[in-house]
Image (cartoon, rainbow, N blue to C red):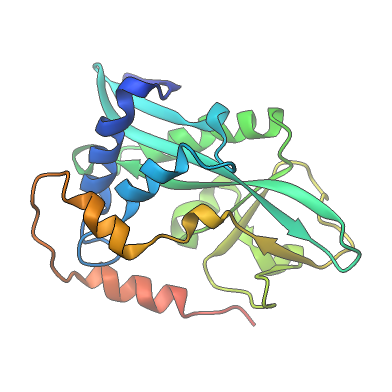
Length: 212
């Protein structure tokens, strides 16, 4: 498979947003917000430009991964800055052939070289355990309200960095998407039908599940 990875540039912006819209449309909700989220991330103070990569096949953009700064804090108010990726997207015509996995593998070492000792995400464990991600409870990391959602996942890049402490995770505020603005932004794109799919029900089950 002839896939090339490179940093995103200004000329890629709309194409990457189109890609995200195709990848996420009707997946987690009728329609999607990911293309709007991407448009807001690029100018956000938590955005990590050095980890904003696209995947190309024969000169066509087929995948994208974007990272933001996040952090964990313990009871002693000690803070560790971490990295969080998402959206990670692959065009539907090129899914299930390893492009998403390749983007993770390509960028995780670069995240470590940029000073991040761990990557922390919300995601489906079925997709990420093969990359070394584990449940947050294994590392004593919870949400700010002390819960352990099923989809909270950690990849240690620096082994033992969370040892001997309990931590609470704070993600970037950029993920607090304004739904009205997202819907307005979607008007810039060709009309697509919004519909219900079973994947939306599975997503709701996942985000309502917690590890005890």
